Image (cartoon, rainbow, N blue to C red; front, side, top):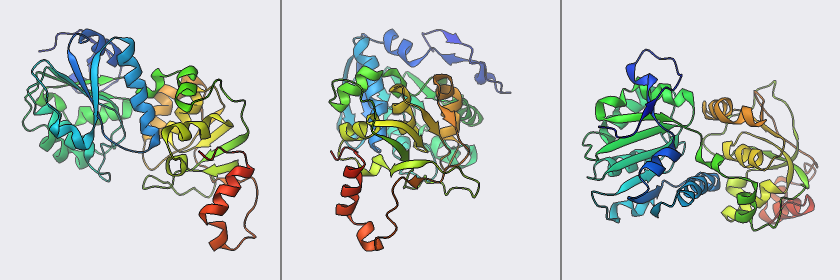
Length: 329
């Protein structure tokens, strides 16, 4: 069925499919560069745009003929038997999110196209919670080939436990596509001529449903405390908040990735599930990022003397950032 070589993953597992995977994503793009590609963005926060940018850089470097669409528009996009569909990676294969990646996978797999590729991905480490959703998404596969990449070994083991091979899926293991970018790419996205020296120590502590309450023994980093995924007004603004830092402590994965690519000191801490630790082990530790078991962020300047309704207001928040030399747009 597969017309590209299979190579060893080196991941121990009792399942036969554990020891094979397609070549990396770049090699699959190259192998199918003469076909038309449709790239599908599943949605998410500004950090997910870093994933998109990395995959799109790979596609451009290899000369792919590709177009893109957001997930809600995918159903209306026409494809042919010659098409390849690329579903951008994310962390959306879990039991608490929107379910958008499962829907995109179903819509792609049920098309009579040449190839469907799920980009490097993290999944919840609970196969029993995901089994029925994958069964539904892959119940009527019509594409000629389907490759599903994990972006770390924990997710690969989850996918192996789900036995996706029974649906004709070939598993792969490759790095988060954001890691295809370099410092020059980051500056270009941010609209900067060169990498800033840095104005502040950045503490990024996520405030959404993947927030993990800090343990009593957490370290207490001090700096500018902000969640750029919520505060940024655009992807370029999100980038500038990170690039203008001197160093970062964070429990947001792509905040850690962008600052690692920028050559800044990075400490990454856990989120609500294994994703941060798993990607750190597979990709970021070798690039110099360090691990902290828990963090409890502390503002560099104490604003506690202000009444809470003033302290938490938008205007005061903007003043606080301005005084700490954080880009406001």
